[in-house]
Length: 228
Length: 249
Image 1 (tube, each protein chain N blue to C red):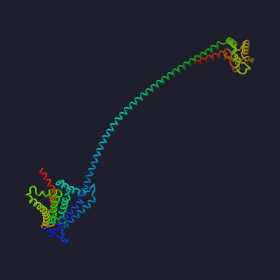
Image 2 (cartoon, helix red, strand yellow; image 1 turned 90 degrees about the vertical axis):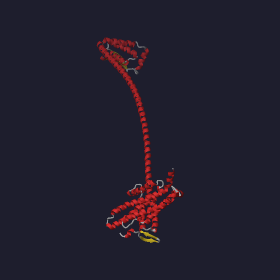
Image 3 (cartoon, each protein chain N blue to C red; image 1 turned 90 degrees about the horizontal axis):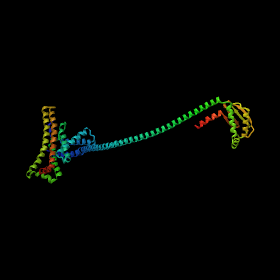
Image 4 (cartoon, one colour; image 1 turned 120 degrees about the vertical axis):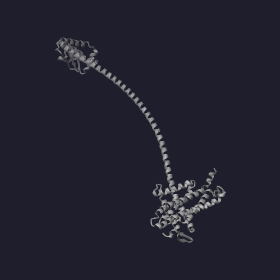
């Protein structure tokens, strides 16, 4: 392991676009998920086998978690939030595979996901509530809080990106430092912690995104219920 | 820690593509299959409820039908008992009627048997009486009685009216050439002469007379003129008496 393991290495360039190992890993993950789901979708039956049962359990768990937060619109936001959870779990655990690095240790990737969460929050809010009703929630409970609401929108997006990036980056760095200091097999405990941390960070990122989107969707309902 | 805009853009595009892939190949098919399974389970539950309701309805219907059958069976049983009573009564009446008829037949048969017994007894008594009389007359018979019987014959022949004589003369058909006279005792010449004279007068012929002796006659005569036989003796009289008694009973 060298110092280059902690840096983002460009592999090649397509015109102005530089393809880094982060993008390549993301493509590999996407292709693997596409192949897996494509093969799975061709073999779905009413009498499920063990694999189908496991996949249905995962999907049902995601659906139930989203339904608990946004019971009226869970079908609309499920693809986005569910994809976040699935992608982040796989991406975070990629660091355990020798030769691969987690895409989420790259700030560009986490920032891209955070921006998508930011945009999808407003997208779902405007789409479901309408632009006037949605934008009105920036003025609640008082127009004086408009700057704070706007700052909050930006800062929570930045926090979302930096939190995931920092945790994953620090885990890999800690494992690398222990490997350098203590030698072979010494980072195994920290790698076990990596598994837990990868699952926790994926859950936190996805749950925060869900809460943001659900908050944007249901802000009008919340105001109406508060008035009542 | 640096931000690569190309990575940033490619990650956004890549994630959006991934969302589409998962929506197309994971969420939609899996949720569809789950919905189908849920729908199938609901259908089966609905079908099970319908079958249960149908079973309950059929159960109620069968219970009612069983009750109807039980009632109908009881009615049929009562009707059968009534018919059996009627049949028993009818057969008992017929049996009594048959018994009464048999009793009447038996009474008639008994009466006939008694009458036959009485008749046989009387006939037997008559035959015994005839036998006793024959034995008595056999012991008591003799030439004197025969003489007396010949005299009776002669008297009766003399007393025959003219029309009867004509009738007798036509009964024996062709004129007989010989007249047989049988007696229990030997007839004296005087009686023979008297008989020949009387018979020539009665027949209007002059046939040849033949005299025979037969002890079984006891006493008296038997005159044969062709097919015509005149019996004037104790044996035939007793026999005729017995036959007359038999016919009259």
